[in-house]
Length: 68
Image 1 (cartoon, one colour):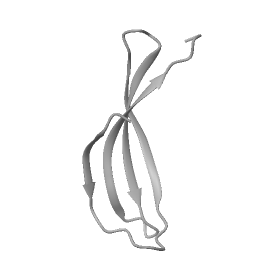
Image 2: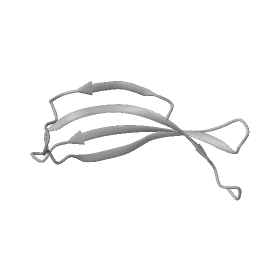
Image 3: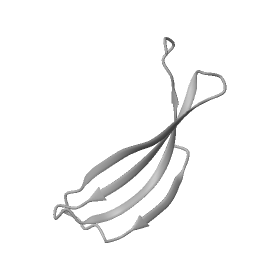
Image 4: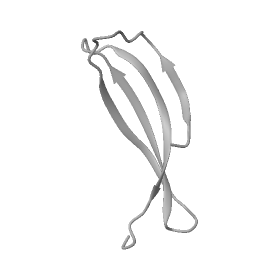
């Protein structure tokens, strides 16, 4: 992971809560070498009542396939 951006804690999480993650791919950017790249992602955490409890963005560095 390359860090978190715009992370917001909307509501508290409690012991016993059930959370689910919605993950959206925002963008991709190939690296200069062609062997790696960056993927921009947006996270939304919702509790068992479908209330938004946290959201934010995080980039991740990935390796690409040799045949792509």
